[in-house]
Amino acid sequence: MHIFSRIVEVDQVLCDLDVPDTYMDDAEVKDYSRHFTDRETASYEIKALYVPGLFIQKTEVQTIKEITDDFLTSGKHIRFFFYLKGHSSVKRGAGNQDYEHAEGMLLRNYLDKSGGGSLVHIPGNDEMKYVVIKMSREFYIQLLKDEQWINNDAFHQYILAGDPENRPNETLYVDMRTLQILQEILHCDHIQQYRYHFLKLKLRELLFIVHQLTHFGPANHSEPIASDVGILEKIRAYLILHLDKPPSVTELSKMFMLNEKKLKQDFKSVYGNTIYAFVIDARMRKAKKLLFEDHNVNELAMLLGYQSVSHFIKVFKTYHGCTPKEALSRFKTLTSATQKERG
Image (cartoon, rainbow, N blue to C red; front, side, top):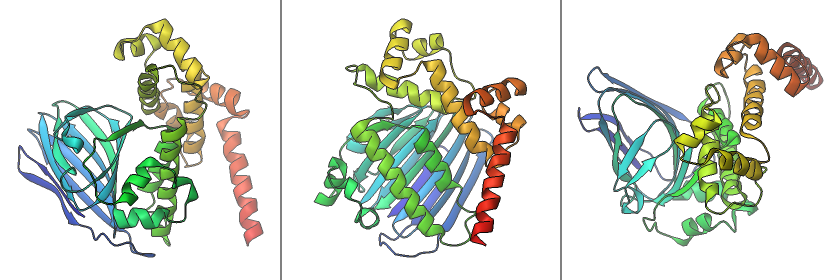
């Protein structure tokens, strides 16, 4: 794979990298980073890691004026695109289509040079964040060759069949588990040994979750409500990405142009929870994860959008049956006991 990206307005190359297509049982994970700031156009930061057959990139953009990202990846590759924040549009992208990016969108495709490039237009005064994972065909096939769950997947069979056909992107929406795995992949630099093997494990887990979303929808998903499910999936993903400042039902209904009463009824019917209860559940699950990553209570309250620390502690105790301090103490005790047993 040859991976190229350039900001057109200032002729600034962000990435120009050759990644061999071959799969290796063991390999050294290499890091790539690029930071560019122009006071009149934008600030662009790329952090990536790669091995033969695999390229994973996180990009954060803060624009002043509208900019255009001219990107191209050549060679047969499978692309997973996770759009986490902002607004942008693509001209003549995969399938020769023009399309808009939406927050929470998960796009996947099997591409080569004919479909692996386009122009991405990012509006001025905007902030954009996304993660893209690209695998060579050989890497993808070897990664999943022993996984039985993927055998009947239509997308997988399309890849096995041969050359890409430059089809339009398949569109899904992220959930909490998807985001958690992405974070674990992107922040694995603390692993001193077997980092590559960790990445392969996490990629299989991520692809399994995507497979589940494709065939069965998100967890607790009941029978679909006709065409409204697509909108509900967008709303669900949007809420997950904005747990620090979740919009009200009234705001959501305006944003997604739905009747407020119908939105509340359909959301509960599909996901088994009210929108309010869904936000609380997502916040508390994220709170426990962040707590075990050494964030203090004040940080947790701020990251999850609670203006009162005492209110956050009360909600946490109601949900988990103990305070954050008690939960952390139990976790440390359990971890210490496990380490003693191993020692």
